[in-house]
Length: 232
Image (cartoon, rainbow, N blue to C red; front, side, top):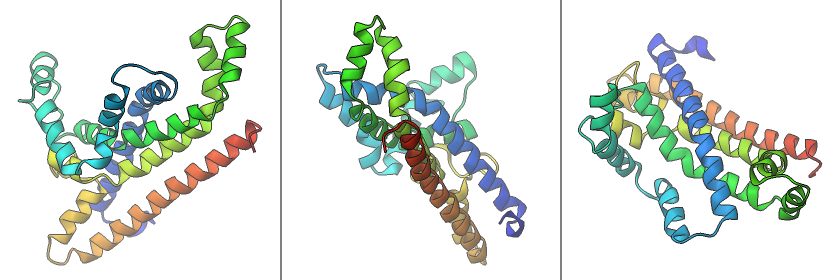
């Protein structure tokens, strides 16, 4: 497939894969924690906390990008300190594109993991606790293995979402070739150029193939893990 892409298009594809991969990897541990908290714990303000977690799903992605700019830009209320104290600048960088993709896809991962935790029999956790396992031991030896299909499925769905992220990315980190111009931004850029239809079509095909592949892989991994765990 890659042979018919131009060097600039290949850079966009490579950047998209890099951004989506790291966005998924970095967001997975907090997503597991948040999904478990929402499934297992009751605490004051849980509904508000859940609403905040789900906000990136319902807000316009441009709004998400603007909020990231306000928070993490070099003049943002957090970003200014990251830049002044540690020299970390997220705007106009691949790292910033990764943050935008992670924020947008985070609720999808949380929701999949939350459903996976709900499907785990709490009696098994209780049995492990009565046999002397601590809360963390029970989680890592009982809960986590049983929720692995949901974790992997959620991660792959988040990966597909990150591959298609546009609004938050262009608002937060702009459209910089080789830094933030992922496939969706490259398609947008091609549509604004005379004679760019062919490039947009090629990148659209790649985007469809990658997204469909991630979704099919998520379904396959979910079924294979359920079989391995004896749940089918």
